[in-house]
Amino acid sequence: MKEKLYTIPVSEAFETDSECPICSMRKKLETNAIEFTMGPSYMEDDIRAATSRMGFCEKHLEQLYKNQNRLGLALILKTHMDKLVTDIEKLSGTDVKNSAPSLFRKNKETSSVVNYLNDLEDTCFVCDKIESTFDRYIATIFHIYHNEESFREKFKASKGFCTGHYKILYSVAPQYLNGEELNGFIKILNKLYLENMKRVRDDLEWFINKFDYRYADEPWKNAKDALTRSMQKTNSITELK
Image (cartoon, rainbow, N blue to C red; front, side):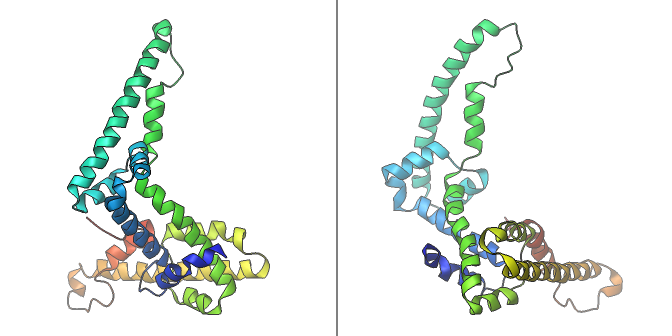
C-alpha cells in the first residue's frame, strides 16, 4: 500500500522521547521543507513558479532567512515581488474601471485587489509542502495501527499528544477504523491524552510552587522544563525564538 512509504518516519517519531510524536513528525517535515526550498531546487522553473505564486507565511519566511542562503532567498523573493507588481498593476486597473460608475454608491463587492491579497495571505509554499505529506503521515498512523501489533504497543507507550494533534486523531479516526477497533482506539487515545496532560499540568504546578520561598529547598523533580512542555501540550509549540 502507498502508506507503507511513510511507515519509517511515523514509526521513528513514536520512538522519540516527545510530549507529542506528531509534533516531532511535523517538525521534521518543516525542517525538510525549508532545506528543500533553499536547496538547488529553487533554481528549477516549476519550483520558482510555485514560490512566486504562493509566497510564504511570516513564520516560514523567517526560517528561510535563518537558513543563511541569502542569495537564494533574494532570488526567490525577487521573482515573487515581480509577480506581485504585475498582478496588482493589472487588477488595480480593473478595479478603477469597474468602480467609476459607483463613486457615489456603496460598493458591496470586494475589489479584485483585496480578493487577490486575501488569497495570497492563505498560501505559503513551505506550509503547502508540509501539509501534502503530513496528511499521508496521519493516514499511515492508522494504517500501521491497524496492521502492526508492535506499533500499537509504541502508540500506547507514547507520552500522549498536544491538544491540536489529539483533535486530529480523534476527528479522523472514523475514516480509517470502525467497530470495536475504533472504540478501542478512542479509549486509548483519550487515556493517553488525559493522563499525560495531567502529568505535565502537575509538573507545571510544581514549577509554580518553586517560586514560593516555602519550596525553595525542595527538589525540582520533573518541573524545570514544565513550562515549555506545557506550551507544546496546549499549543503545539516545539521551538521558541
